[in-house]
Length: 619
Image (cartoon, rainbow, N blue to C red; front, side, top):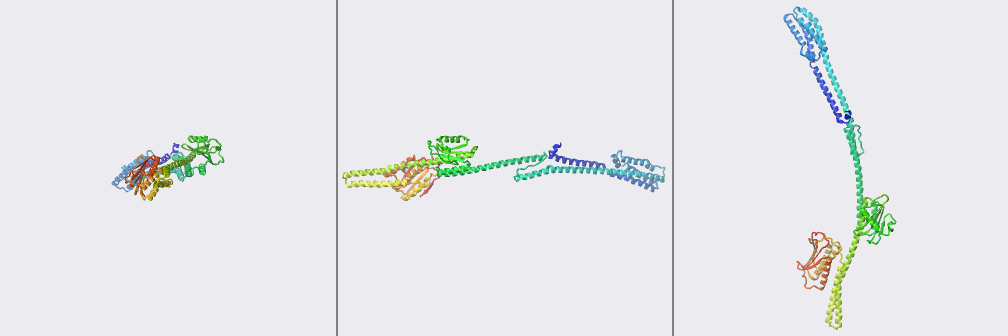
């Protein structure tokens, strides 16, 4: 029971409230009983006091009586005194004092009245003087007995009042003790712990999680204090974990930022000079600063499987031991195995490769007991891939340049053969004819005709040579076919006073430089034919995409239309156009144009995207 009270604030508060309630109830109950006991005491005292007054009244009447009527009145007064002696007030009072001093005193008074005094008023043998003398002799003792009874009644009432006061005082004293104990318990068990909890909560609010609330009892507030201490401990742990995670995330973000900056800088540098030793050296220096690994080296080759890698750059090494290895296949295969299976070794290596091309190895050497973190491995892999991509793009660009150069040389040779070479052959034939006629002593007219043909042939050859020079000097100054077409349109508009309209719908197509050159040359040759032979005033160039993602080129004019016979020089130009169309795997057609002249049509499949919104440009 005591343990239960010690461990429960509610129980202690309930006991205190119950104690106060019990004391109050007992006080009320005792007060009611005492009040009930004192009920009628005043009336009894009054009645007893009236007995004394009635006794004196009888003595006064006896002294004043002188007739029969006065005697009768005295008897009536005596009867009234006898009735008061047995009144209800005294009877109820005496019932509560059975066989005690007050009851005995009443019996004494009653016996004295009925045996000694009352018979005197009904004794006929007594004269008035004798009655008065005897009554006066008896009344003094009788009144003294009444006084005694009155004092007893007064003392009894006073004792009841003192009892009531004692009960009230005891109740008040007990109530004060219970209240004092309750207030003390309230202060020690509730107020003080709550203040401690409040101070601890304010410290937690200010960010101080190293708090602890002390409470000796295992009551509700003790449990609350334990829960608060546990909460503060958990918050401290969580806050520490959060700080640690924030630091880790911050460090990871910083590493990511540094890695992105490194990758961006490496991409920019490699885009300019991928094979430069200084560029690769700067990238290796950035890797060392970012990763914190001191020993990083790089070996490259020229994509020749038979040759060893050439050590290009070393970090914190005067001479790399790997340079003494006679074959690089072992190092390269080792780096490939590590890249594929993640072998955790001290000397890490990362292959620089793309597709089937292998360009070299990136070596990373750590100190004993140190291993690369995952982010470092990812960064080294990313840098290796970036270097490999740059070198692969550089090699691809070189190959494309070689291919384009070969194609252009073939085109130059083809065009020289189809135009200038044939013209020179024709001139050679005419010179031979002229010599033959001269040896046969031909007429001047025949010789002049041959000379005129030679002159026309020379002029034609010279004109073809100038056109070939113009074609071979052609270059695309801005990226894309559209700017080159605009420049061509401006050029031919000035040369032939021709209004040319451009409808370009290939902005989403990714054309190779070779394809752009071929399309541009076909369009230029078509415009040249329009100026030379069509005598047109208007022309329309349209480049569009079909629903099946094919490219269609149409050149329309409002000239004289297709001739019945094709001129020899014009035939050479058409042959060159068809040859270029064949290089694009396309078909070239010439049909009547809705504008009244000729329509040149080219339909081919190129590397393209979805057809864009078409725009029309007037020049």
